[in-house]
Length: 270
Image (cartoon, rainbow, N blue to C red; front, side, top):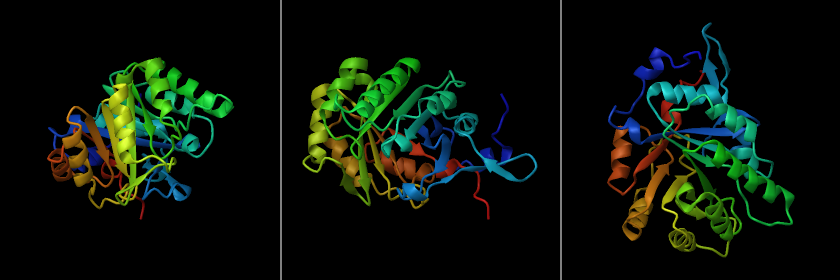
């Protein structure tokens, strides 16, 4: 396989070597391409453009982005299916092609955009089946059920029964530090209580308003509150993380792992 990580990209890595094992590289999929997420404005996300050997730029494939993270030393990937989150079928093939060449990945967080468990809704059924198949295909994967997409907390029980609660993660989504859920009858506390009851111990906390801004994270107090209330949860946080200092700040707030994309991407074209 070609090495797409350039010397300049490695030199611009703003994270210390000791921090790298805690980082998780983010891959956002839209129409089988990886896109640059900015402030949660998904309608305007643009495909990543990668430096090529002739100095021009070409659209970077999801596999190329995973390899870039891999070459920088990351062994953990978070991959989100934005099409499925928007109501379309899971991009199963694109996710599989992006991850299959990297057998030494130590963990994979997958958000396949599950919305519910309505057995009368064929798309719901198809998504759940695809999520289970992806979990079976990648033994080190964890399926994320995100508050911004899941309509029914029972989805956690169904998936936990099929693949085990240790391979299911609760996704708590915020926008400008405000909790986001499609089920307006549930609160953050309801989601946390459901995860604890089922035996789920992984939480992914993202502030979409900070994503792609390089403005620094703002989730510290939210993470601290959750960590203190649920000390046995493993918290992965993301949104605006720029460097080792940001990681250390969130570590002091009880976070264990950290989602990073923009800070590790090649420079944008002028």
